[in-house]
Each structure stands twice: as structure tokens, then as C-alpha cells.
Image 1 (cartoon, helix red, strand yellow):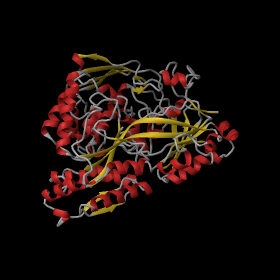
Image 2 (cartoon, helix red, strand yellow; image 1 turned 45 degrees about the vertical axis):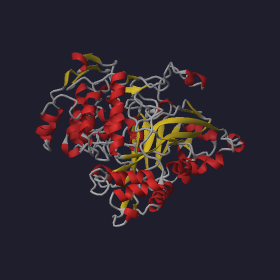
Image 3 (cartoon, helix red, strand yellow; image 1 turned 60 degrees about the vertical axis):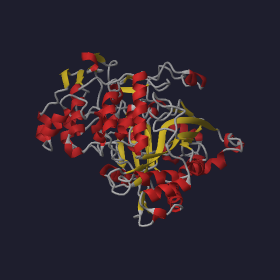
Image 4 (tube, helix red, strand yellow; image 1 turned 180 degrees about the vertical axis):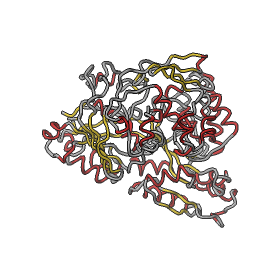
Amino acid sequence: MKKIVFVLIMCLAFALGCTKKEEQRSIKTLRIALTSEVSTLDPVNSYDNVSGSVIYNIYEQLYEYHYLNRPYELKPLLAESMPIMENQGKRYVIKLKKNVRYHSHPAFNGKDRFVKAEDFITQIKRLSYIPLNSTGWWIIDGVIVGVNDFKKNVGSDFNKFKSTAIKGVTAPDDYTLIIDLTQASPQFVYKLAMSFISPVPLEVVEYEKNDLSLHPVGTGPFYLTKIDPNKELILNKYTQYHESFYPSEGDRYANSRGLLKDSGEKIPFVDSINFKIVKDNNNRYDLFTKNELDFIVLPQEFYSQVFDDVGNLKEKIKATDIRLQTMPTLTYWWLAFNMRDPLVGKNLNLRKAIAHAIDMNKYIQLFTNNTGQKANSILPPGILGYDPSATLPYDYNREVAKDLLAKAGYPNGKNMPELVYDTRAESRISNDQAEFFKEQLSQIGIKVKIVKNNFKQYLEKSRTGHLQFFQDGWTLDYPDAENVLQLLVSTNYPPGPNASFYTNKEFNQMYDHLIKLPDGDEKKKLITKMEKEVKQDLPWIMQYYSRNFILYHDYVKNYRPSDLVWSYPKYLRVK
């Protein structure tokens, strides 16, 4: 979803500080611990896991991913059915469900307000509106007919925003949305499941002066009742939520784990969610062991306390009714260079020297306890185009690194300016990682200055191009290579997701062709060529693919970890 943006941990727990399991189960409140402050609750600019964890429970989209089926598949949410394709795949005709109410808001003057097709047009306009500087602009830029003309002609004039139409987005009636694309794009349907294209009523936009960062109004199963962006957010069950039901089918895993017992039951099951911002790993783990949190993605530093020598849960942990799930993720990591930076961006040999100077095996051992899978590609496993036999054009070799540094013009680091590394979070691990890179590079003579940031500061620097050398990562928004390769297209410079400011003319041309292709051999071959270009230019030093160990109390029912289903709380029970 999104810029990763990194919820290292999300924890579910019961409100009111109860410690007795029986009391907790009677409350039916979930408490979710987020690892950072919430940057925004406006879907026009939410592109990180922290804000997304909240937003997807408030707002809804045209489509969503099936909770219990893998491989992932889309199904209608606010749409009545999957889109009808016309004009050789360039026109999406979407019928909407009727009688879907928004949460209450003063702009509605006490009346019920139902979703209309026009509300999606309003949000697409907001993605294009220059003053909002949307991180979601990339999903429609040059994709929807007339959207670039709208952006140019409207500028910062809100009256023009309201009166100007986008040629390629029309609503012939309240329950029909038509989107015309500049070219066929089989992947566009995935974007209709992203929070960027959530319906927003124009009257709410006007009332809130086009700033919904603290005032979300959606149609989701929960609505916001309290917000302190640096401390906690509370969501309550929306009693007028449109009829939705727990899945009646699932894959083999879902059946074997008993995840279909609530088939056909109306959702959501819980009454409220309490999101608490808990930045420190120790605090989150402590809350979990005190039975105040429902589950945690286990921090690496606690592995020795939880697992025995062969990787099983220790008996003392099992005795407390704690259970374990191991989950491969769609999240992975790399070190990134700012390709506009005059030092690292203009010197390929310097980037190569840095890539050869870092012992990534040691890094994975220290910071993932060897649970991370060393990356061999700019793509993650499980999507078309990933090659398990692929190799990277660099590996740890200090002597090679020194030779390359000399070729870069800085023998043994002589006369080289200090390299600036920015951390991405306020945590001990983030700081320790920075110190690791500093020590590794010092071995070949490169001096590193560490700049510490909280996650919000890191995001702001990323979006404004004020990073030089940094850790970056991605959780796939949808299971297609396009979602990774768009991180490297020059048209997606920040506030889009190309935080490295990478540009390559041939890569851009291949990307323009890629987005037209359905899955198949032609697409696969093109992906391979695009990856070759990136490996030669080296804007990224690949690190590892993540895998999570999730501990949860056995009173949490129906929980299935996922990188794509952010609205999972609506499926959960606490018993």
C-alpha cells in the first residue's frame, strides 16, 4: 500500500485495561497497537501501514481482497459486481451497491447520506488537486483520460475544482461509475481496491475545507470517535453499516484452521477498536505478556524468550494459551540512494563500493535472527516475473569494495564527503541498524553521519527528496510486478513512491508497455529486461524478504494474517 511504511508490529487487545480473560471477552473491544504516530486519516495522502491500519476500517473501496482465499482474489465491496470491460479494455463500467450510508457528519444536516457515483469522482479530483500534493497521484497520472488536463487547468482554484469535469470519469446516474483509461490496463482494477479511491462527499470536502486528515467520513464498519494522533484513536462499530457477511468459503488453510465457523454471519463482530500508539518493542511485548494485547508480530529481540533451540514455542509460553502463526509476507527491504544527490546519485562506482562493503548475511542474522530470506531480486517471491534463480550483481567483498571506491575517486575514503544515513523510526533496532551500516562502511574508509528521525519525519523527508542514503521497503498494494516497478518510474517522483528519484529512459518506455500487458510470457520477459536495467544502475541494494512470527491469545478467533487485507478487524471475534 503503499509506501511501507512500516508497522513492524500490530497488536490487538481489549480496552479498559482488563487483565482477566473473562472480563476482556465480555467487552468485545479490540485494541491495536501501532508502532508510530498516525500521519494522516485522509485517503488522499495515506500511503503507509500505520495510517492504513486505521483508514481501511473507516473508509471502503469499490473492491477488496477475499479474506480467506489464497492466491489473493478481488471481490466487490461498494461495487455491485466486478467491472464490465468495454472499448478493448480501456473503459471500466462499474455498478454500485445501493443504500450504503456514510457515517454521520455535520455537513449532512442530520440526514442520511448514501454513496453516489459522484463521490468517487470527487475523490479522483482530490488526487489531482495540486494543493493536496497527493501521494496517490501516481495511480491515475496519465492513466485516466483528461485527468492531467484537469490538474493543469484547475491548479489551486477550489471553485474550478468543483466546476471542472474530468473527461474520463463520468456518472450517468447515481449508481453507475464509468472510467475511461488512456490505454488498456489489466492492473487498474487493483487500484480500485486501494484507499486512495475511497468515495468522499463533496459537502464534507467543503465543510472541512478539503482537509480530512483528522476528520475521516466513510462507510466502513467502524467510525472515528476519538483522536490524538500521537497517542490513541478510538473507533466504534457503525450500527448502520451496510449488510456484509463473513466469508462462506476459503482455501485449504482456512478450512484446516477452522476459520469458516462464522460463515454467513453478519459482520463486524466487535463493538469498538482502540488504536494505541506504542513505539517501543519492549512495551508492546510487555503488554502482550500481561494479557493486555491480543497478538503481536514478535520482535526479533524476544525470540530467545519465546522459542526453544529447535524453533518451537517454549512450554511455559504454551501453558498461557498463547499460539503461534508463521506468515510469509509481501514485505521486503533494501538500502536506497537518492539518485539526484550529487555524491551518491552521480557516481555508480561509489554505489557499487557501498553495495560490496555491507555484509548482508550478517545483517540478516543480527536483525532478523535469520528469519529474513536474503533477497536475490528487486521483486518478491510469489509474483509473475520473480526468478528464484536470479542473482544480484554484488555481494559482500571488502577488497572489491575498496577497489571500487578508488575507481569512484575516493581511495580509502580520502577526500570523500561524509555520507548521510537517515533512520526511519524511533527505535533501538533502527538506531542499531544505522550503527551497523556505519561500522561496515568505515572498514573501507567511508565516514557516515547518522540522522535520527521518527517515522513521520522520515516520511516527510522521503516525500520532499531530503534523503541521501536510507533504508526503504515495500509492502505490495496488489500482487503484480507493476506495483514494484512503479517505484522506479521517473513520473512517480515524490510525493509519488519513487523515493530514490531513479530515472532511466528505457526503463520508463518498457514500463509504459508493461502496464498494457496481461499475464503471460511477453510480460514475464519484459519484467526481466526491466530488472536488468535497475541492477546495472543500482539505485537499490537489496536486503531481505520478511517473514513474521505472530503470537496471539487463543481467545482471538478468525484471525488470518495478511499484507493486503487491512480491514481484518471486521472479521474478528473475541471469546
